[in-house]
Structures are given as C-alpha cells and as structure tokens.
Length: 381
Image (cartoon, rainbow, N blue to C red; front, side):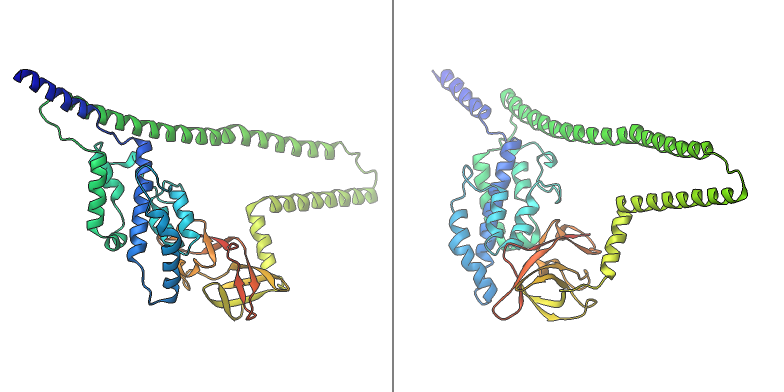
C-alpha cells in the first residue's frame, strides 16, 4: 500500500511537470503587450501633478478615459501595443506612447528591443525577466516593488521548475529548450530568406539590367553615327558650311535634350529644382519664430524662423518646420508635428526634414493655430 502511494505521487508530480506552460513566440508577444499596458497605467498614475495646467489636462484624460480601460487588463484580455499607442496618443499622452510603449514594439523603424529571438535563455524565468526589463527613468517612477509583484504574478502563471535528479523532469526541461531554440532558428531562417530575395533581385538588376541598358545606349549612338556618315557630302563650299551648321545645330539640340532629361530624372535634378524654388519669391507666406502649444507667435524673417506658413487662403493655410536642430528639441515639436522615426533612439541629429505639410487655421485671436488631426510629418536625420 505504501509503495502504491509513492508511485501515484511520482506520477502526479511528473504529469504536472509535463503540463508546465512553455512561453513560445506567440505567448511572448502577448506578454509584451500585457506588460506594456500595466507599465503605462502605473507610470501615468504616479506621474500626475495637478499643480500644472497642462498636466491637469493630461490627468483628466487619464482618469476619465485611459484608466478605466487599462484597469481591466488581464493576461487573457488586454490591448495590443498598437491599440495602446493609439489610446494614449489620442488623449494627451503621446510622448509616453512613443517613449514607453512604442520603444518596446518590434518595429523596423525603431530599435528592436523586445524580440523573442534575443532572449538570453530558454527558461520561463529568464524570458519573464527579459520582458519586464525597462529603462531606468521609467523604472524609478513605476517602482521596483510593483515590478516584483508583476514578476511573481507571471511566474505563478508560468512556473519555472528547477532541475532535480529525475529523468522525466530532465526530459521536460530539454524539450522546453529544444522548442525555444527551434522557434529562434525559424525566425532567423525567415529573416535570412527575405534578405536572400532582396540581394538576389539587386544582383539580377546589376548583372542583367545594366549591361542591357548599356547595349541599347551604344546601339543608339552607333545608329546616329551611321546616319551622319550616310548623309550626302556637300558639293561646294557654301553647301559645306550649311551642312556643318546643320550638323552642329542638331548636335547641340541633342545634347541639350539629353541633359534636360537626365536632370529631370535624377535625384540631383530634383534637388536642383527644389533650390530654384527656394530662390523664387514666395507670395502668401509667413514665417514665425516660436509657438505656444499649437499656436505660432512672433512673425519674423526667413533666416530666424522655425515655422513656415504658406498657401494662405483666407483663414486656412499649410505649414512646415523650417528650423534646425540647434534651436529646438524633439519634445518641443510633439504638439505640432508627427515623427516618422524615433529621435530618442538616435545619437546626434544633423537636421530635420518635413515629409508632409500640416494644416493651420486662424483662431478667434487672429493667430495661426495647428489643426488637431493635421500635424506636419517630419523625419530626423
């Protein structure tokens, strides 16, 4: 009877070991989204400061709109990272969405911080610690105690059993490691396949396309040369002069035509056109030196300006950023510009390029104010 009880106990123990949850790539992405939700919620809750007008507006948006949604976050039901970014951006917390949430996403235009293939170990504990890791500035606000609480919650849901002297347990740990390594190899294989196709297409263009273009160009030049040689030679001096002038004129026209075509089709030509446009006078255009939230102030010369308002039609116009990086920081532009890349993950910023103009209107005070959903799109280089 005693032996039977021991055998049953061992069977139950090993069945529990085999039933242990393993964090695969899909579950990894789910946990990243869940942790982003509770981190954002805790950060905004502690960051409240009612002594400042703008912060009071942010706190109202958080308390009335954001908090009721994030308080209901669970492992099984929560917002995705994209949904969370939209919720924060639409309700006065765009900077938090960019720095805290979007930096944790696996997007090519940002640093790939939380990637399943970059987990340093195969066990659940290491994966959870990797997901919970966060920038020190946010860690101080959120608090180590809260992070430890989330860690205990996740470890309870995804227990990480220690290796003991038991053949079944060793088999279970080996299976988990093999499954993790297989997932990583699959991801790397898919990336390598994509790169192979890209380089293959580029190689095809270089090996086949360029020689073909060169062949047709040389053939065209040869045809021109043959046409000139086949023309009837002049019979006297006057005809000779007329013949030379005609050929010279045709030659000049061909050269001018080819130069114009090359300029219009090349990036150098596009830049030249842009330079010419800049030198032309700009009617219906105003320049402003600074702003307050979404309103432009201090009209000034073009050299001192940060913002350019153009295409003015009565009470509406377009605008773009025309300053330089030594004057402003990215935080200064969040109210009026949408960032097409992440300036906080860059080193030195050499210049800022406007990729899409925004829209403004004249407010009741007669000042130009940026429309809420028509921000300019800029890129940091």
